[in-house]
Image (cartoon, rainbow, N blue to C red; front, side, top):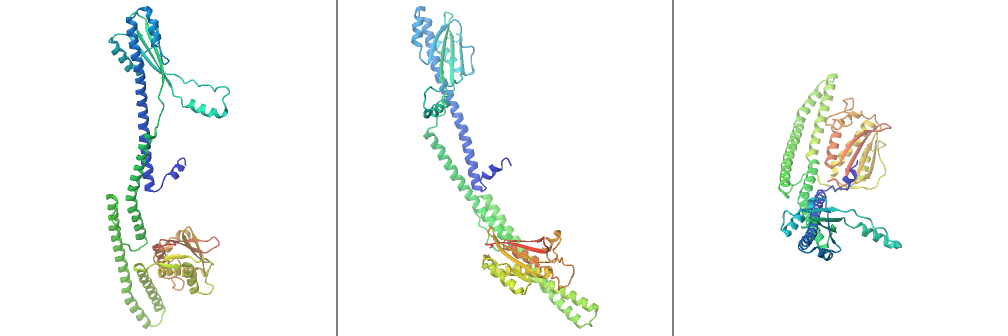
Length: 465
């Protein structure tokens, strides 16, 4: 939950994610580089200021060592400046050598030419003393003053102590400020150009990858709905081309496998017609008895199963072109064919969908006939939700146990207790309906109603194929 907001803000597309990651990486590397550059610049400026003070101090030491004592005050007054102060005393003011003073010490000893001369150097930061607001400052000027004070940098003090030839110490103090962060327009231009180049590369890379992947997703969806489609083109990077090639091979194998099994099922069902017809004729020639009546019922049931299986196989392999159809008119015709009070259609607006008309007509007819057969009546409704056509077919029957709602769609499953053809078919009606609806990219589910009865709910894409 803590990072859900960030996840929602993060792009979901591959191109957007690639662009964001590259820009974040660019910002991190450029920011780190800017910090390192700024630190190096600070060091260089401090070293330059320290070396300048060290050079002046060393030259003053040479003058003091060679000048008479009465000239020392004049030399010190001449060396003093608003930034650097020179004082001669008996004790060194620099308590110790700091880490940043190595360069300064080497510079002083090099100018003096006396490596053994005692020299101390200390570099330390000074606390920033807040400047009070001047009395009488107008209220409009106060924000400007606060902004100026906030931009002040930390002062740094350099203290040098060099032992003179007479035993005294020359103490030198100078104060300077760390240079602040300065970003010029010229410095930002390369960063903007780099960001534009990164965005262009991310877009081109994503286009090279996303295009074939979208085609692959569409092809997989069409394959799942049993639609014939040409092999996908081999485009994009090597990995994407290999994935596309593997998908094309899988599609060919699955299509060949399904067609072979379906044709075999159709051929088997067709070949069973002849012996079943012969058996029925033989039974008709027998004297009517309890056994002959029972055999005749069994043969008729077997023949009905064979005919339903053959019709199911034909429906799977039959190719029908898609067309725009008014779904409300199609349902009205189906309800009218049932007739009487056994089927009703709630008033609905015309809804144009792209379907295979004969196949979907058969699927919906099976659902309506199933409701009439087991529930006495079929109440049909049609509405539109989020780009989907939602069709419900409700009955007033006893319903089904919840653990059998999914099993009702399995082929040859008859959940009705008797084996009479008057109350139950071959057990393929719902299986055929689900196969056809899924081939349109839709779904069909059964659910029990609170007030009693069973309801079939169909979700069908408006642009199904």
